Image 1 (cartoon, one colour):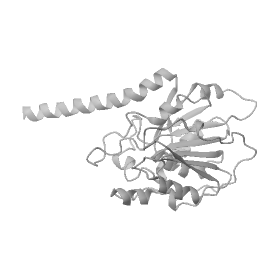
Image 2 (cartoon, one colour; image 1 turned 45 degrees about the vertical axis):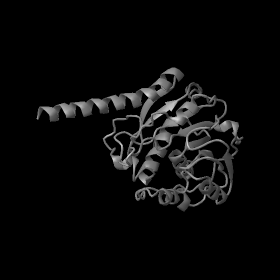
Image 3 (cartoon, helix red, strand yellow; image 1 turned 90 degrees about the vertical axis):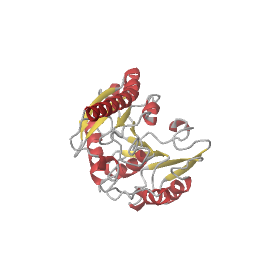
Image 4 (tube, rainbow, N blue to C red; image 1 turned 30 degrees about the vertical axis):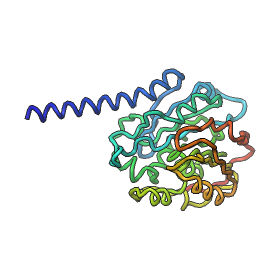
Length: 281
């Protein structure tokens, strides 16, 4: 019994250390970049919302709407090395959080449900595994974003990997989205699942089966030429099915490394003449 108790204490200590390490990684970036940091309620979930200094200044009244960049991180640690649901999906090294720290435009980091320790009672491992791109997830993120953005500013959604999935799913639900940028985006979920032999994401939406985005939304979908997780051909095929999309293959980039800042690769129009005519799904 004593040995069992000691073992349990050891496990708790290890888990606590793991959560502290995960937290300190992104917290270090937040502290050094002077990001604002709050938790915003969505429809179903809570979401951590970070804003860079330019976004904090943009909250003051402006003579004209400012174009905002909204970042959505990938799947992080949805499962462990054995393919089992992890205890905490928060990524150890958030790729887009680091990228946002270099962005001089007003920028907002939209936390996914159950990521970044929001102490949300609605969370369970299903939320970041089978339902990682679910209707509830997308609706809650859309609501949290609308509550966090000032006014009716035009925005570009930027997502990496599974964050690219969510960026595409979010775009038609928000009238002020004028651009979508994905980096190694998981845009054909069924193809990805079948190719790798993963469990089907039975509770998730698949961008490949959704109607094309409205033509008034500019799209740029980038693939890492060396990516073995999200194959470039899937991204290229998705781009070709969209009315206003560009496909870019990034040499020497794999799924996570070798990526330049997205704004050095594309030039999206940052002005807006009229809001997109969209049907909210």
